[in-house]
Length: 111
Length: 115
Image 1: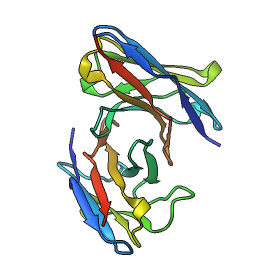
Image 2 (image 1 turned 135 degrees about the vertical axis):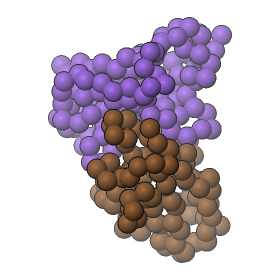
Image 3 (image 1 turned 30 degrees about the horizontal axis):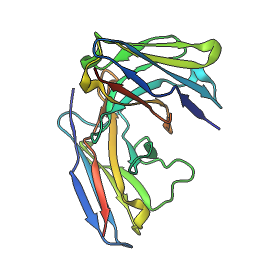
Image 4 (image 1 turned 30 degrees about the vertical axis):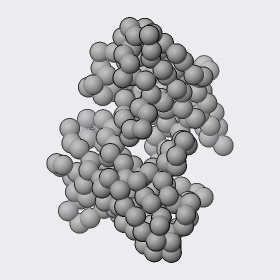
């Protein structure tokens, strides 16, 4: 199995852009999609990115997902930060046995 | 619209078992795997396993393999997760989520394990 490592916390000012990384401890993301979930305090997680870079309907295009060229790291970028973006963000993928793996989560603070 | 509606809050004693249900609607139940995920108080998300509603095949996280059973009843489009030999550190919110493309989440079921 592998681990997904995220920064514990990030902070940025409104209207700025922030990027949250999600790095695999081993292997590559090829053939194993990455998802990103947003969880506000006391709420159910919400999918904001699936299959590496796809946005569900209703998720603004301020949110974008990508995989780096080596396929060992994924990123979630949020542009035009708003106060309502303040939440925990979790990345998710699968290993070769199709077992799910979550990152530890990143707490985003909008200053 | 896709909906996953879970059963209500449970309080269990250590050593007991709990069964959480997840009623799916708004899509073809057999077409998407159902995953179970839990979140202990103040902690992150933890993947427990999935069930293929079409075949009934399952894949459990190694941590839960001896204690979890995931089943489904296609006649009522409902998935079930049973966790046995409960301990205090099993206290968590348990979520079902529909995978495959956009992930849809149930509202969560709080399971409290306390003597």
